[in-house]
Image (cartoon, rainbow, N blue to C red):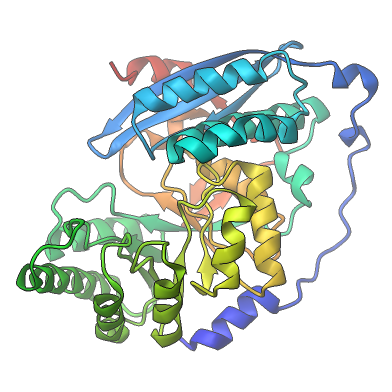
Length: 403
C-alpha cells in the first residue's frame, strides 16, 4: 500500500454527487416544536464476557420512539446512573433540543468521563431517530444526504476470539472472510498490562502479538486488509520498534500504539511509521479532537458515535478532519443500533473511509433490531426507512436480558 497516496485519495479526491431532492417536511413547524420527550427505557442485553449491550428507547409525546446505543466503556451500573440523570434533563424538552441537551450534560461528561459521554451519546442518537420518523426521512437525509448507501465495514474479531493464540485468531479471521468481510481487525497485545511488566516479559508478549498478526495474514491472504490495534499499551520507544517489526504485514493501519496523551508520542510514531496510523476512539467532542488533529497524532481519526457525544458531534468531528485533509473511520464495536447511528452519518461524510463491525459475538446479533441488520459481504446496507430504520426486538430483549 502506498501510504500517502492512499490517504490523499481518501481525504481529498472530489466526489461526484447527483443533486438530492430535499424533503419539504424537514423543517419543523410550531406544532412540531412542541413535541417533547415523555419517557426513556433502558435495556441491558447479555452478550458475552467482554460486556453487555445497553440500549435506550426514548419516547416522545406524540407516540414516536427513537433508539440509541450506550454499550461498553464503563460499568453498566454507572451507565444506568447517567442515563437516569440525563433522562431527567431531557424529559419535557423538545425532541429537537440536541444542542441544548449537550450543553446541559457536558459539564457532567467532562467531570466523569467515558461512561457519562456514552449515555449522552445514546440519548442524542435516539432524538435523531425520532426526528427522522417525524419527517418521514432516513436519518442520513438530516446529515447531508446520501453519498454512499452501502457502508464498508471491517470485521473486528477481537471481542469474539476467546482462544487468543495465533491459531485462535486465525480461525476467527477465516470465519469473517467466509462471511464476506474484506478487512479484518484484531488487538493481539491486550495481555500487556499497565504499568508494563519487566522488559523480558514485554518482549515475549510483543512477539506473540506479532505471531498472531502473521497467522491471520497467512490465512486471509494478501488481498484482504489487515488492521492491528495496540490499545495504547506501549511506550513510545517500544511503539516505534513495533511499527518497524510490522512492516512486512502490509497493514491497512496500525491503531493507538501509545495512549492518546501525550500527543507527542503518537505524532512521533506517526511520522516514523511506514503504514497508516489511526486512533481517537475514546476522545469526547469536537474540542477534544481539535488538538489531536492539529498535532497530526494519526493519519486517520476514529471517533466513536457512542463516546464522542452522538451523531451531530460525529458530523462536526468529521468536518474538522475534512478541513485537515484526514479520513474518518468511526470506531464502534457495538450493537446494530450503534453501527446504524454511525452509518447514517457516514453516508453523507465526504471523507468517510470504513466503519467497524463487531464480528461473531452472538449468532442473534442481527435480530436484536427489527427489521434485522442488513450486512452483506462486509457492507452495511442503509434503507430508506425513516430515522435509523429499525426498532428494538422486544422478544429478544426479554430473552437475553442481563440479570
